[in-house]
Length: 89
Image (cartoon, rainbow, N blue to C red; front, side, top):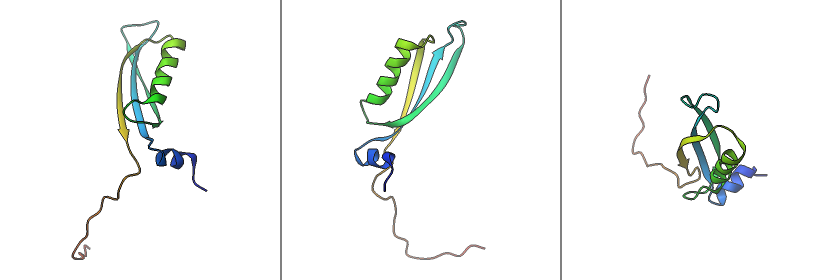
């Protein structure tokens, strides 16, 4: 039986990583980072938006900026045919 993550990938979800930078509530001059990773849909990122809305609504550390990286994990095979074999010792 396939995993839930595999089913999400078949529906078009890809692995999304967000590096979230935020200011410390007690020391606003200091910026911390938090890494968030989940499967999400490019280009609107509904899961990430939901998490950032939760952050803004529920957590004290105000957001500074967010950097997002996204990769579709299921894609056509990236291979090429080779016309020879090389032995390396």
